[in-house]
Amino acid sequence: MTNRQILQAMSGLMAGMFVAILAGTVVANALPTIIADLGASQSSYTWVVTAELLAMTATVPLWGKLSDLFNKKLLLQLSLGMFVVGSLLAGFSHGVELLIFSRVVQGIGAGGLTALAQVVMAAIIPPRRLGKYAGIFGAVFAIGTVAGPLVGGVLVDTSWLGWRWCFFIGVPFALLAIALLQRTLRLPTVVRREAKIDFLGAFLIVAGVCALLIWVTLAGNEFDWASWQTAALTGAGVLLLVAAVFVEARTAEPVIPLGIFRNRTVTLTTVASLLVGVAMFGGTVFLSQYFQVSLGKSPTVAGLMSLPMILGLLVSSTVAGQLISKSGVWKRYLVAGAVIMTVGLGLLSTIDADTSFTLLSVYMAVLGIGVGMLMQNLVLAAQNDVPASELGAATSVLSFFRSMGGTIGTSVLGAVLANRVASEMTKGLDAAGIPSGGDGGGESSVPDMSTLPEPVRQIVEHAYGVATADLFLIATPCALLALLTVVFIKEKPLKTTSGVERLAEEAGATTATDKTAVGS
Image (cartoon, rainbow, N blue to C red; front, top):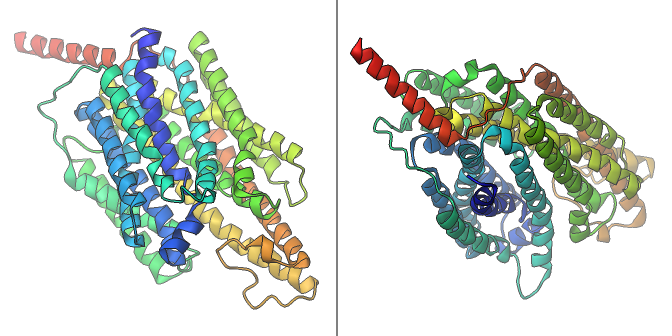
């Protein structure tokens, strides 16, 4: 394909990826209003967020495997269609139960978009040329990440729109993506007569992952980390995943081919993706709260304050991609990205309620530069080192572990944040001679700063500043482990043929081998 044809085909992929990112971020600043309007509880607040994340994370490997068996273009359009249905259901919801169900449907669609967009890119673009196009996806990721909370806050604050448009707004982008894919994406249909879906393995993987994700999401909020609920969910999750490994090792068409983990590059990039998910998403997801509570900014301004990190990610992913495509050398950018990400997290661990925005911008930009050089190129390294027939499985495994790392990091660090805020507020209130009310500020909801008297407001600002810095301090060792993992990845020359071409070559080699065997 020419550069023009690739860019035309990517237009639909970029629109789809933007939709997937928007689905997860647009409700961030709108949820308090949504839950209040529907008359729902705090636990419902948690489940509206968790339902989409669980469904997306758990179904990524399934979509990846399906892409190795069936038409990738049709699967992409199907996932977009599911997203449209989920968005419409969410927008028209008049009860929290329907809203949570619609978020599950949205999550399944977003899981397909997350996995399939990168799989299709690898199918039509050779690894040697993939870097510069991956930078464009980095830009879409950056725009969707920063635009989501910002758009959500504006929609909620606009009286003639309201929170329902947080869900409706993604529908035109999804329909546009379906139309663009139909018109611009041309993939050969590969019919595999032996294709069979491993339903038992799929069920065990989804059930096991959901059990563990529900545990890390709710532990520390709905129940204690050391409780019977923890024992039940972790025990069930581990048993289901052990059973899944047993089934996957014996089935002809496993959802996650265990053989790909014999590949050193796939194993190391998977571990690194998990650690990047914990460090990156676990630390940065609470920045918006820090901006609003510690620095006293509005939701709209808080969204804009993330721009330095997003710009750093955008520039570094684009520049690194261009350099990789030009030189064919990629490991140095992985190592440099991991080093810079570790430094960025370390710098952010020094912030407090009095940190200037200039200094904060520099720290966030450093983190964004590191993540931009590392995250997308981990996928490139894995895709370059697996057979074309396993591109979907390998790509989805990396996306799956990155998402799971983000979920784990967000949940665990969220519990750490709540405990540290409670401790700091109790200490501050006692020092000021103000009764703490017995709860020490340990409620999971963010306080309304406008209603607090000045002495208490300063204590709350300080507590959230110290607690947020602690999150980055905890995330820093995860980034350091990611660096150590990346160092052991062996650099291999980037292939100059696309996934479709490699698949044809592999099929031809197999046919030739079969004919030779018959002749002999």
